[in-house]
Amino acid sequence: MTNHVHLLLMPSQAGQVSALMQALGRRYARYANYHYRRTGTLWEGRYKSCPVDNETYALSCYRHIELNPVRAAMVAAPGAIDGQVLDRMPKEYMTH
Image (cartoon, rainbow, N blue to C red; front, side):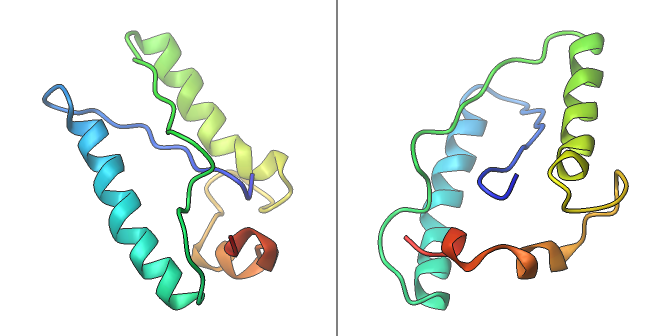
């Protein structure tokens, strides 16, 4: 799980997720490139999205997001993730 993130978003207008991801890519890339003395893009490819259009699927998404760090052996229990997880990431994930 050190190679991706999950976001479960509820945009109020069409196009907001695309705008958010574009802004995040630009701003965070600038920060990460400076901070880690690297260049280039942060993402391997385009982000992927899909509509969550019913409660059952929404609960499945929540479950996946909460259990993903547990399955990756990054934390012992759901909800136990903290900011220090990034400190434990292998350095090759932080370079381009």
